[in-house]
Length: 103
Length: 405
Image (tube, rainbow over all chains, first blue to last red; front, top):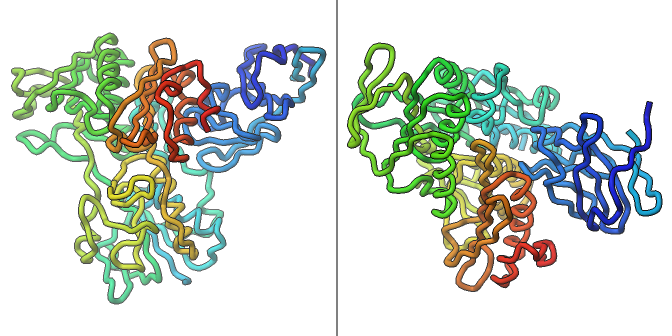
């Protein structure tokens, strides 16, 4: 049963950046796009299970800190080798100054 | 062009094949490899393949059976005996002959063997099967001697130590990682190994390796040391025999131009075996043994054959994992004249290498991936900008590198 979980404050994440959020034994990545929108994906790269929150956000793309794995964090789509498996994404809602994700 | 043959089915050769199909090439495409596996990623072989509890399996590039889906004719378990350039034909080890319109050489490198009595007793690492053998032998051993304190030697030392084996690293040079890594970071890597309980001896001259019982004795300037397993990690040599025999220009690898063409325009070379120029580092040539170069040069050769004229310009980049430390170096350290250090916390360090005009030409980071991953990626973009950088801003961890782009 999906539920909305309070993940962080809006101000916890800079524009064009990402942070890690752990909940219920799983790890997620929460993104703030350059124009201030929030997004959420699974927290681990589909290539070698590295935390994407240590990676670099440029525009719509998160690049895994370990290798060259790149994903569009808004859609989860893998952007080419070495990653070939897409990331799961999760709905996000902003309530006041809080960011909620539905998991 | 309707008949392309790729010799060498590692990351570079496999990537060239995939990129040719992705780029719209519909003609015949043959990929010749001596190994029985589909092209696989080699980086895990010195790391996860040794230490993970589960039996390793090759990690196929691009996952699954992408090559099968792309109508790529894989010829495994066969070698190329000769390139007959005048006839544009390959002679294969099983007697077959194979014509080509264009040929990509992705023959890779082989582990350098120890040229001393008993040197054949030292196991080396190159293939998946080598990794399987090392995995078994390390697990069966109590004491392991690693000859060579380069990246592969130190990764295998870290893997063996992680499995609680007694590990000694013997290095001929007076420091570790000379070819790849700035001294400050190499010293930090060494200190970590020592803290983990690895014995490291430098300036050691190995004399011979004798079998004794089920193990070995390594005789060196340090005296005689017994071990159940001896590992050799003293570098790799480009596999250029075919190119030399075919009369191609070869000097520390097969010489290629900016588009990765050899001295014969119908033949390209990629990956570990290629020696190439780089537009960011004029006046230099380089030969790299690293995953990104294999990947990117393979893809670039495909673009050249599909009619592209761009210079190959992927920045040199490699990583090494030892314990929970990641070492990442991007750019060309030797092109730098000054070093600026940025301390990232928890002992993590990023070194910026600047040329005499203050342009960033390389960055080297050591620490956990959480600390250094993003910074290295930003440094890479700064290197690509070729702009002069303020040393003060680079050194200040409070300055977001993204703001310097």
